[in-house]
Amino acid sequence: MWECFSVYFLPCLWAFCACVGFGLVFNIQGRGILICGFGAALGWLVYLLSTRYLAGDIVSAFLASAVIGFYSEVMARVRRCPVTGYLQVALLPLVPGAGIYHAMQYCVAGNTELFLSTLLHTIGFAAALSVGAMLITSLLRALLPRLHLGGH
Image 1: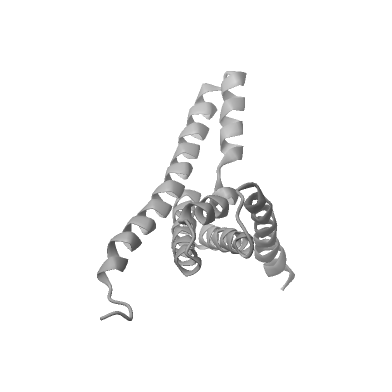
Image 2: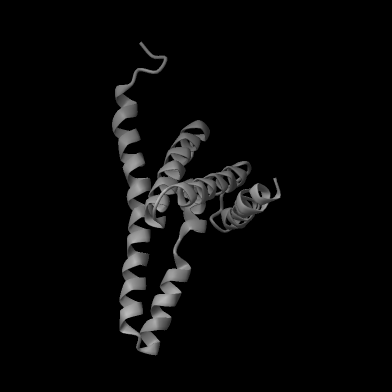
């Protein structure tokens, strides 16, 4: 019980809190801030679960960003707000800042092999984030107008 709480719930709670703060910076109003925070917590949960059960954190980043993309698209339509605010804020906990930092640290130290491997991994991680969100957004924007939901 405690392991589940400390491994899954607490990191998702911190992602939620951090993104609520960033929602203020991005000028997201009212309940939208909580929606962004919940999107970040959901994405972080998917990332944590998929890194535990799948091989590789790049695949996990792709899945988490796809879930965040879907969630952001749905919430934007429900609230009739732009999707970019929800998407950008909810993706923040997954941004590979540590990878960029360590790559530059290895570069400055002259450790070319570690620099290149860390840099390529960080680029792959960032690409997985962008492709996951972009793929879901593109699919939903292509499919939703073709579906006749409640109309004649």
